Image (cartoon, rainbow, N blue to C red):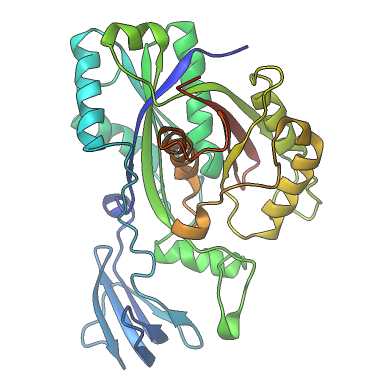
Length: 369
């Protein structure tokens, strides 16, 4: 059954995590590769309030916060300096604000659902509560409720699924679905290194780890009646969101054969019209073999629904692993591909796979269909 929910507008703000995750840290004894290609064989990096303030040879003149001895490691300060915007049109941020203003003017009830990282080192303990409180202070009369979903990679799509259900029940008319995450806190990076998940080269080579990133993104979902009332033009139609759970996690000793992801795929593609196939796929694969193997099993079981099941886009290759922001930004990429007529067809899938077991997949239809 199709859900009559429509993706209206999406915006991307990458590198906006500083207020939540900014830390002071000093990295010493590192081999440093700076932006112009210069290599410092043994140098130091000083970070204050989440910003690099010093890169120099030898010891730092003034240390800051926690000190990390990076002997035998290579650092690339600013390598993921990803303040980038994906545009769905000119002044997309102003467009989103204008649509929210129009919702208020016309009595359209708008909620907010935010996907967040699951518990891990570097994630503030009270992140959910503090973020909800900050949002309500900043937007005191804007949202008809605020909810958070702390499930990592799949969190944004789980938030979209919950938004669809609530809109269908009449709890509100529209929902801003967002995702935000950052792996760049020093304790998060240390944790990834200890779990052999951090991509690296040299002495501590790990070709099968991932490059950490940070990002935030948001989309607006709205039912058709409100769209018509406001005179808006949707970017794409969100047909369905499939969700499932995978018990054989990445850090478990059991073998994952993609049963959870397969179940999520099957739920999502059930909304694709008979005779049609998914032609475009956006996912959160990040270079880890666990994720690639899981996807391979899921593809074999659901290949009849895809034009080319092994043809996919993995944005982590470009912006790093952005975990909880993956879902909303994947939807944004799919909608942008439709809008720019770069898609291979009219149906796209976005999927994400959380370390904690949650699996989610969404199917979108081009607005022109």
